[in-house]
Image (cartoon, rainbow over all chains, first blue to last red; front, side):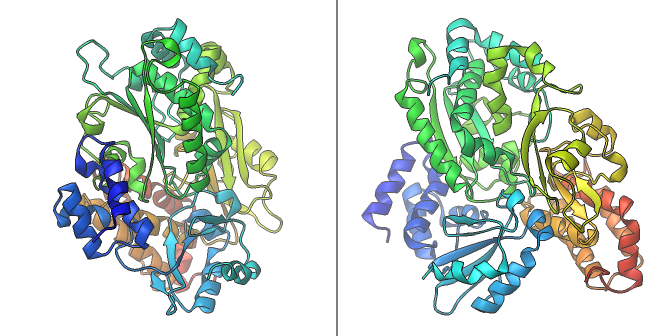
Length: 154
Length: 402
């Protein structure tokens, strides 16, 4: 079941579009914002509000890279693996994160603190390699600074 | 906001929509998102008579996701009001009622600044009902995407805005006639729209005079990779690759030798040493066998394996294929696998021919949209310019760079 707050926010989005289901991406973002991911249960509730079938809504939810249909950790690390970061050595950053957190791309630490995901180009190629943790962007990364950086996220 | 929005005042108070459209068409401003089509010409296909369906839409494509491209971020973070001003004037030219900024999710700072700037523009009366006391009204919204390269393709972007999977639509009908929610729609790149205020203020001849070459205006050029000063610069259209690389980017980083470059993002053909004195404009780069694309270059150096470089690109394209048409959905992962096997030392003699077959069958005319043909550009040109490196992987049964 969605909270009153979530429903209120979703209805606000519905008011801005000509047909209800056009608000579905916004609605998924709202749920994810509150719950960090979109469970089957949440998906069914959103589909009902938008008068869509759950299957149709799931086809949209699974299409986009940043709608999470599986649980994620408290902090999500998005490491850019695109071409400029490849040339500038993102693999060293990835190796260090794997060794420190004992997770690979697509995995979450056992304590639920971090999920590590690859991300297509973060659009700061002149400051590669780069990664984002939650909403913060970190540029010109070196392996030495990673441990201190991770310490900021509990 | 002193000094800003002059072009809104000029256009709305002293020009007809047709005059604005004609001015932009005469300036020969070409779309800065990569396709390079005359912007005023693109607008001219929007129905303008009294029977035209409404609402009409204008969308700023700020979904910058071409790997190696970071130019629109600068405009969005540096001066969001310039974009909004350009959007108001463009919306006036096509008589749009509603405008969207379609922003990529990762641009958090740009999102905050654009949202704030839209609010300010409303407060100052540049957006909303009866702008500057005229009978022109425009509503503007910010939409942030949830990540998918396909959203950059204009019809896929419209599907995303409608809350659907971002697969491309068949054309015709073109968006100018039937776009967002089936209504006339123009989608323009951020950099394109940011040029509009200056063209309206200063005229088409002034805009043409800014360039060194045949294509008008200035361009945001960028360089990333192993150079001394990676970055982004606004320079006359037609600045040479050598000037960009050696003067503005400060040359290669110490200890690295230049081998090649992608002139305009991941989906453009490699250029090499012999092309350094070519002008970075649409015609010259095309004559050299590539595309200006977004005008932001990625440099390949001698310490980076060209096969690994191309594998990284094809991994991206395979992952971002929307899966809608078969050659792209099946061909790109196949290409990626072949390149990975070369990198692992498991390549076979016939693999290069197989890659060339893919470059042909995923090329223009064989797929629903431009994603796969774009993906084949760096591959086919790498096979041409770095063939020995591909062969070495096969003969030595390993990647010589590891």
